[in-house]
Length: 198
Image (tube, rainbow, N blue to C red; front, side, top):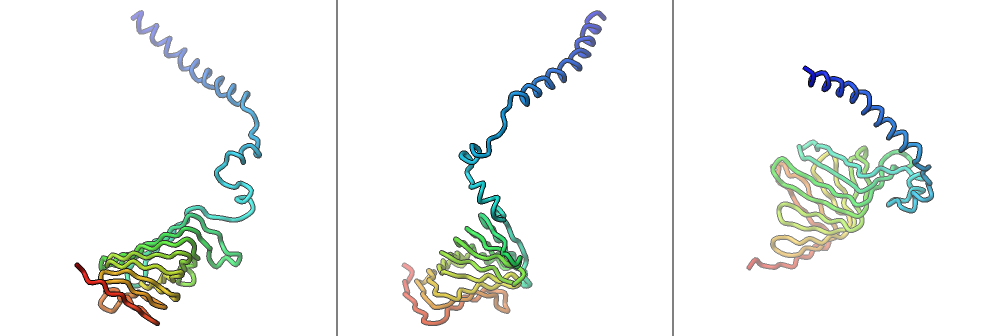
């Protein structure tokens, strides 16, 4: 009985003393903490604070959608800046993935681009690469990705390495056929360097 009373008394004192001591510690922390110096903070920041304050920018934006023929399209970027007219955004370090219901995939990457789903297209530019699940690796300077259907269009010269060799052409288009397969079509001064399989 004597032990129970002493224990209850200790618990009652602890319920009062512990919150009060925590409050005192927090008060001391706020009392002795100095004001933050914005100029010193800018020296240690990994981003340009002044630039962030000047211009609108989204960090790590992501776009996901489904085309009319059932393909899933996902686009991510390191950063994006909205256009002044609000129609879209210019982006840096883009990565995209196109996956069709039949199992075909295309992984895309570019240093820059423009995201405008309202226009029905996302444009990749500057060191564009495409790797398909069918074994093709393509490189071009500009690639238009449709958001409403399965279609990749390179309106500028393209170089492709495939299972049977290297192809260079003035233009390229990848689209879904009526059977659901993907048609890869090269146009304008097409040159094939055939490399037979060993």
